[in-house]
Image (tube, rainbow, N blue to C red):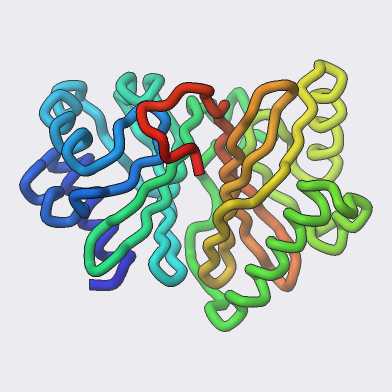
Length: 258
């Protein structure tokens, strides 16, 4: 199986079938966990599956992309109090090694319905089709440079080199569509003492017209993880999804968030 197929099978075993035996065949015993609340290793998550099943958790995957041995899922979890809320939007990143899932990173945020977002878009709707596979490397470079220049702030004035001035569909619940919506949101955050700062991109995964990044930074004074997904069209970013979560000082392991 391909890495994407291995991860899809593991996620079904874990969060649809809640089957420790099936999942155990797909996870390495020394599975490295980066979710702050879950101990590292396969045993803790496998042991938690019966209790998780009792909660009525359901998982819906909206997008999946892969590059090399890294696979990214963009999902919604319902009845997800065990994960932090009734409905949680998540990016899960899995690393596959020798036919098994060897490592996992994630970032979860409480879902905001489209009726209450600044753009009128939900956190998960929008385009899903992976296209332009021949442009994967170019699109990856575009987003990598965008993160360096604009998000980290090396050359923020170059934003229109990367983001379309005509179409920029936004799924962050606090941000309106278009560059105007982004600018207004950033100003409002700064005025509220919640300036957003990126310091380092730890993971970048690209497939065709989609590029995912997992970055570290801060929101105000709070250490924060930013997981972003960008859609590129004709050499410009035209759509954006994300989840934002604080990085706790204490974790259930010593692996860190990244």
